Amino acid sequence: MSEEKKIPYKIYLNENEMPTRWYNVRSDMKNKPAPLINPGTKEPMGFDDLRPVFCDELIKQELDNDTAYFDIPQKILDFYKMYRPSPLVRAYCLEEALGTPAKIYYKFEGNNTSGSHKLNSAIAQAYYAKEQGLKGLTTETGAGQWGTALSMACAYLGLDLKVFMVKVSYEQKPFRREVMRTYGASVTPSPSMETQIGKKINAEHPGTTGSLGCAISEAVEVATTNEGYRYVLGSVLNQVLLHQSIIGLETKAALDKYGIVPDMIIGCAGGGSNLGGLIAPFMGEKLRGEKDYRIIAVEPASCPSFTRGVYAYDFCDTGMVCPLAKMYTLGSDFIPSANHAGGLRYHGMSPILSQLYADGYMEAVSVEQTSVFEAATKFARTEGILPAPESSHAIKVAMDEALKCKETGEEKTIVFGLTGTGYFDLVAYQKYNDGEMTDYIPTDEDLKKSIANLPPM
Image (cartoon, rainbow, N blue to C red; front, side, top):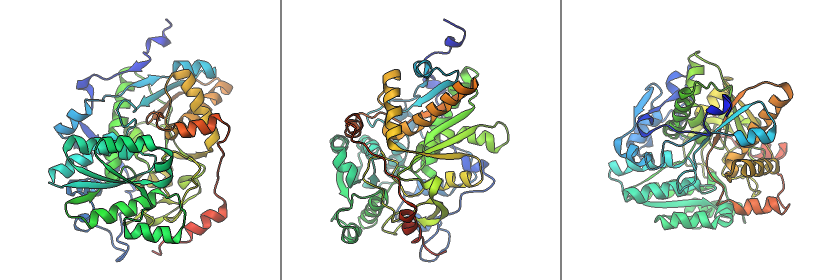
């Protein structure tokens, strides 16, 4: 074995090396994310304003821009130890197939039944709800990973869960729906006829296949009209990126173990939970001026918040009942094509990531769906893992960057996030394999219509 191959295929941290604190990247940001705004008063929302919707401890985490580290409660650590630390894998076989001098690593978050990184925040949010003495939670889910993860966490802690699943995913991914039901959650396709907002959206958009914005509106309505319930979100919010920092902290610890310094870190971007978690400690070093990394967000061309959206205050949901957040957005009433783009279908982007992008600390690129599945297939055939469509956006760009290294001869080190597995996404893989998959890119006119409806500030 060559000197290079002494770095193992899989770098594992032992149980005692797993981080015991989450890292809050906002503590190192000179320009903090803009506050959530009350759509009625146009004033920043404080703790009391958010209490009807969110759990108390999660609100504190959401609003805290200064505390660098939060201790992870022991019960959450005990749960994490069932599937963490997760491996950092050297993609030797992919490197060989590409003929690249680049060194490619991926952080694999698929070693749990939910099949994704979403469980990292699901157990945290369920824990704080349980500690508050709540009866249950409501949420939305797009491709189903978040709903699956939260159903597992709620089952573990004995909480009721009501999930509103984007209708197109509800129909395309019945097996993920059944996993949620197996763990005790109720799952409703959104927009539904069970809420006032759902009825309104169906009346205004007959036959709509739904969006995350629609599902959020319904979940919030149910949470705020049922005693003992609160709403939780699987991405976008500051608290979620805080919990997901466990991904980046483990990644950095594994790299440090072998003295590996990445040149670039690549992650898929829908609402921002995976990308924000993966890049957190690296971005912290960049913000503090200690090191520099090239950080790339990859989003679908069908829902291009970063690359074609505007940086402005917008509603977080289609029903316009949630607070306003300053983010890169396509407009809260933008409904992506039913054309499959995995779970990366949210109209906006995390306020944290939006601020970092606006300040020039990271890049963004959008990619078309057929090229994403081409990369996913290549990865599956070389690395032996069937990747989630969401993750495959990052795989596509990681492969592109590795091929650039082949052209230039540069031995760059690339790290990307493999958010989970694609075993519940076989309808999409079938369409790709049958040659039936198409690419959809919204026109400028499409985007102008939704962006024109941004709330006045």
